[in-house]
Amino acid sequence: MLSDTPTAVDRGRYQDTVTPWEAPAWRTEAIGWIEARLAARGLRPTGRWRVRLRPWSVLLRLCVEGGDSVWFKANPPASAFEGALTAALARWVPGHVLEPLAVDPGRGWSLLPDGGPLFRDVLARETVAPGAWEELLRQYAAVQHALTPRASEIERLGVPAVPADALPGVLDRLDETPLPSRDRAALRELRPRLPDWCAELADLGVPDSLDHADLHDGQLFHPAPGRFTFFDWGDAVVAHPFSSFAVPARRAAERYGTRVLPRLRDAYLEPWTGAGRTPAQLRRAVGLAWRLSALNRAAAYGRLFPTVSGDAGAATAAAGARCLLELLDEPPL
Image 1 (tube, helix red, strand yellow):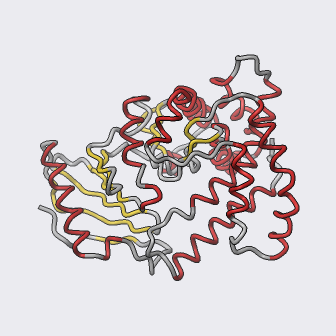
Image 2 (tube, rainbow, N blue to C red; image 1 turned 90 degrees about the vertical axis):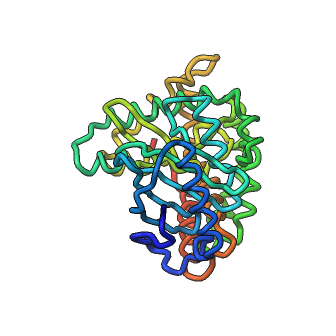
Image 3 (cartoon, rainbow, N blue to C red; image 1 turned 180 degrees about the horizontal axis):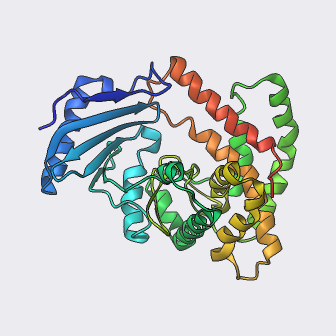
């Protein structure tokens, strides 16, 4: 049986974060749910466990007999869809995502197996060539391509739908984001150009699909050479799929320089070729989506637990502002 006290609680930079974890009744209910779901799988917790609290999630890592780890995640209401989405993805694109041990969509709870080493950890201990990034982007794009017929089903799971023509409205809703006056003026000056960019992106005819919206090296596992497993879908939207490219491409460029970007872009575009679209059109669309992706990533910082305020609220607002300002940057492609 799990005790009510973990071995460690990690609050990161958000020391004043208030999440449901602070409520004893919620903790008791969550621990009971975890134990029941593990028992249904024939698993027994050893009692060694850790908690990671953030304004956007409660995450528990537990050891079970046999030495494996399992993870419990509680999402805030605005991203409570993640458990149901993860379960659906495990059916639709098996082998590319984690298959949850249990989900409670009504409460936004998930119980997940360990996925192996994070790609971030592999990068820290090994020399990894840019080709690995090409392969992960190729695999991720193939997942998105396979999910295009599922867009309506994904939306019905509660994932926000943000088609290209809705993006100017996203910027309008973010008008109260705390920014220096010069940056605010620059965004307002840019605003009239958004409808033309969005129309051009939509006119290419690439259907909307699942956009992870935060696919960095800490959001995917790399269990073996050539294999990647994608997870952490709390920021996801149904949107133009090419919006997913910017985050991993930026991370790769930070490691290897911008010279790798054309090869990464072309690897990502492989599943999207054909259907009468020229390479020049696809590359232009990636550039447009790179810039416009800043909007949904900035908006995702509003998906917090309702009780978040104070320094934690200010920190997440600042992070959202940094994303928003990427809309001003010319894509380095």
